[in-house]
Image 1 (cartoon, rainbow, N blue to C red):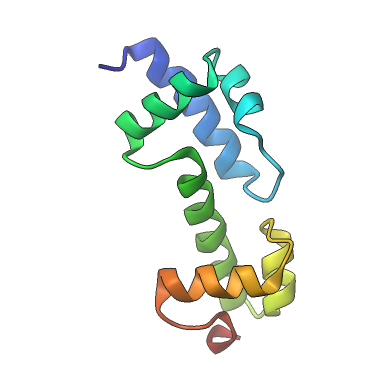
Image 2 (cartoon, rainbow, N blue to C red; image 1 turned 180 degrees about the vertical axis):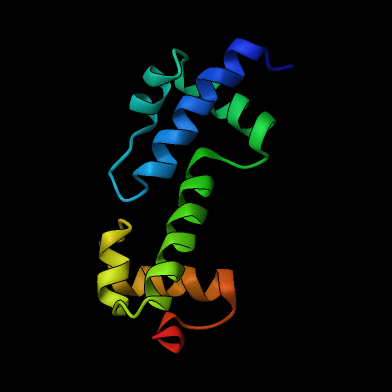
Length: 106
């Protein structure tokens, strides 16, 4: 069970990740923001959002990159802006998530 106060703290983490998915977030920093240990953060995020912290970040990054690609950004620009260091890793994740390569949207 996740208490209301814990849900509010998790929401702070989610909002940070939503606003800045391209930053290098560490589990320790996110746990500090949520006033929890890293293991507690993992468990609570899984309970509330039904995914891991970094699965949520990956999904947000891909969602944002898809928007940028639809606006005409290059694959390289979108990948780097949302936090991927290597375009090939981005392309692989994008293809796995959406079933098409990112270049098909540009």
